Structures are given as C-alpha cells and as structure tokens.
Image (cartoon, rainbow, N blue to C red; front, top):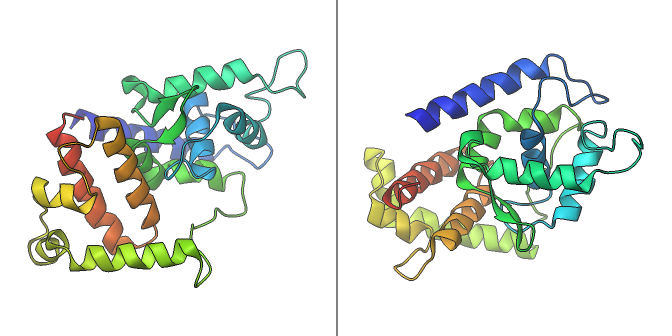
Length: 221
C-alpha cells in the first residue's frame, strides 16, 4: 500500500509539473532522478543495461540546464548524472532503476510501473512522441515478440487470468521463465524485459503487471 501511494504521489507531481514544462525547459517541477529514469527508458533500459556516459548524453539532451556545470553550461556534469542514477535506485525514490556504474543501468519493474503511470509525460514534454518499440514486420525483434505473444496466450497463467482475473505465484514464475536458480537481479531483468515488450498491448500489459507483482511479493520486493 505504501509503495502504491508513493507511486501515485510521484505521478501526481509529474502531472502537475508538466503544466509548467516546455520543450526548452524540462526542469520545472521535476527531480533529477525522474529525468534520469526517463533517459534510461528512452535508451532501451527495460531490455538492456545502459552505460553511464550514454545516460549522461541523453539526460543532457532532455534537460541541459539540469545536468550541466554551473560555470560551463555547455559541459555535461557526469558526476551529477552518476549521483542522480544512484538516487533513482533508492527505495525512498521508488526504486526506479537497478544496476551500477560498472554493470550499467536498467529500468526496474517499479520503474516500468512509474513510466506507465505517468513518467512517460516527462518524455512527451521534450519529444514530439516516443518510439513505441514496435518493429518492422519480419524483423528479428518482431519475430521474437510474436513468438513470446503466442507463448503467453497459450500459458496456464493467461488462461487463468482470462477466466478469473487472477495469476498464481507458480504460474507467474513460469510466465517470466523464473526457476529456483534465477537470482533476484536476473528476476528483475526478466520481468522488466518482458513487460517492456508488451507495454503497448493493453491486455497483456495488465496481465504481466499482475504476474510481476506476484513474483516480486514472493521475494519481498
């Protein structure tokens, strides 16, 4: 309940902040950890690890005055980006990211919740639109997505969800291909990657969100 309230409060803050935001000024009313989370999302951080320097360039593109040196405003303040990335990992800020400077940064399951709940507005404020992640027909990503979609629609978890609106923890683990050998870190990666693949499919998106909650509750996250 506390996490839900925190997420809702964050989304409300973003919505209010957006009233002041233009393409030239993303910084009004927004926090640095929110902007770096949006940057990681834009760079594909739900499916792969993002290097700190790549994140820094994207942050500077989104909000240059927020991530520049004070005296030399044309220069990216890399240390400030590093601190903001670490802040986005903290529980008090919603645990939106996972990772480190050495291994790269990823959107966590909670980070994907944040994006879907309101964080996307951060991106829309400075972009004419965001890429939906849909691939050209016949591409490797498209084929993989269709294969995964077929697997999900045939799963025991989906059939149960369709009839009762519920997904058991056992079924949820099978959805994300999680077994007893899967580490907590890899669990989060698998969950975020699959959810990102179907974030624009309303039915599967809701299904995967519920399934991910069951898995994360089981490991106490």
